Structures are given as structure tokens and as C-alpha cells.
Amino acid sequence: MIRHSFPTTLQCAGRRLSLGSFPLLMGIVNVTPDSFSDGGAFLDPKRAIEHAHELVQAGADWIDIGGESTRPGAEPVATAEELRRVIPVIEALSGKVDALISIDTYKPEVAAEAVRAGAQIINDVTGFRDRGMVDWAAGTDVGCVVMHMRGTPADMMQKTDYQDVVAEVKGYLAGRIEELGRAGVAPERIMVDPGIGFAKRRPDNLRLLARLEDLANLGRPVLLGASRKRFLGEVTGRAEAAREPGTIATSVYGYLAGVHILRVHDVAAVRDALLVTQAIVEAGVEEAR
Ligand code: HH2
Image 1: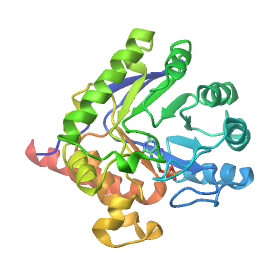
Image 2 (image 1 turned 90 degrees about the vertical axis):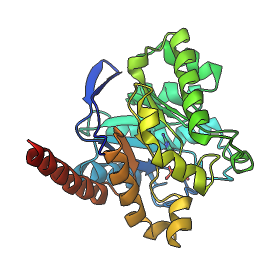
Image 3 (image 1 turned 180 degrees about the vertical axis):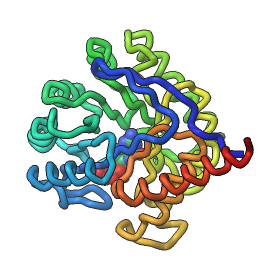
């Protein structure tokens, strides 16, 4: 019944990583005034840098730095402002933390500057929809997170009409892997993400979570970002700050379904839950011998 992570290799910025036995933990650093769960808390670069160090101490393998909120209804941020927010933070962390660094952006200008500052992975919530982003990525060796969404954060919640959400998300991601491949981005550099909460309502999010194995069939590492999201509040009645138990449930479920990377706000809490899950899984394997 347990579909434990199967090994997949990821190539990024000259490194070859083997993913599989335990999910990588991606800690979130939002250098924004308006992110949905921690808006304003890390807008000051000093606080953002400290928070990244705290996340790594708590067990983060990877730090995701973003300078634009993508919560439903969010308006775009100008490129210059996004750069002003994220670049000092990446520069201060590069070479100073024992963790991968990604930039959460869909703008090629921001991606290029972030990589120059030390980022090794581009986390593009639009799934490299912008041809400029595809061409830019093809000329680099960075890792690429390809996420599914429809429209933009401003209008995505008006685009939630699906016949079969799982098939559509999987088809979209397969198409993006193909286009990136044609442009020269090797599949070994790509990770896929269903985009929980992006142009999806509660039943869509729950269906995608229930069928995560289908995405693992794409043959690329699967990244899951459900931390503190709205559907958890809809299921539990809790506000953002009180959605950690719900986040842990999705993380454990994702781990057992074979997810390779978990994008979370509270790395310490999720790590403990996964360590206990892993211990139970290993005891079960022992028992079956
Ligand atoms: N979710 C958010 C932002 N970036 N990237 C990936 N790959 N997957 C996700 O699910 C994902 C993401 C939204 O969460 P958060 O960063 O906490 O909020 P905001 O966009 O309001 O800054």
C-alpha cells in the first residue's frame, strides 16, 4: 500500500543529487510584505537571512527565496523591486549555508540575477510558460521546478473548471518537460509540481494529493507545496498560523506517496513527523523480512 519514494537523479549547477529514500525539505523564505501566511515577517533582508539560517539548522536541505507573493489575487511586483528584495538575501546566503538555494520567480531577468548571486535552482510557478525563461534556462545548467497553474495569481481562481484535474495537470507538466527538452534543458534538470492551490479549489487539491503517484509516473522528482494553504483551512476551519497539523498530514501523506521534495514553512515540525513515519516504515520492512 505504501508507495515509498523511488530513486530519481537530479542534475543542477554541476551537482548530481540522488533523491528518493527521504524527501528533501525545502524551507520557504518570503521576502515580501504580503505573502499569505508570513507576509512582512521577512521583508527586512536581515530577518530573511536569519530565517534562512534557522531553517537550515532545523534541517532544511534547500531554501526557496521569493520576492513576489503568488497568493490568489496578488498583483505582480516590478522586476526592479523583486530584484531589490531577493538579491541581497541570496548573495548573503550563497556559500554560507549547507543547502540548495532556489529563486521563486517567473521572470527571466530575476532568474538570471539570482543565479549570478548564487541560486542553483529556478522555481517557476508558471511552469516556464514564458519563452524567454525557457531560452534562458537552456543556456544554463540550473535545476528547474516546473509547476502547474492556469492564468496568473490575480485571475487564477476564476480558472478552476476541470474535467479531470489529475490528467490535465499531468498532461501540462509532460508538455512543459517536452518543450524544455526541445530547447535544450535535459530532463535530468527538471522537477515537477502539481501547484496545490494555484487555480485549484479544495476538491481539486484533494484529488491531486490523493493521486500523487500519477505524477511520479512522469519519471521526474515530484515537489509538493501544500504548507498552510487555503484548502487546509477549509478542511479544518483554521487560520494560516494554525495550519501546521494540516501541513504535517499532507507532508506525511506525500512522503508515503513517493514525493521527493516538500516545500514547507515549518521545517522542524515536518522533519520530526517524517522521521517518525520513516521509522515506522522501516520497522514494517524489517517485520516483512
Ligand atoms: N506555493 C507558493 C509559492 N511558490 N512554488 C512551488 N514550486 N510550489 C508551491 O506550491 C508554491 C510555490 C505559495 O506559498 P507561499 O510562498 O507561502 O506564499 P506567497 O506566494 O503568498 O508568498
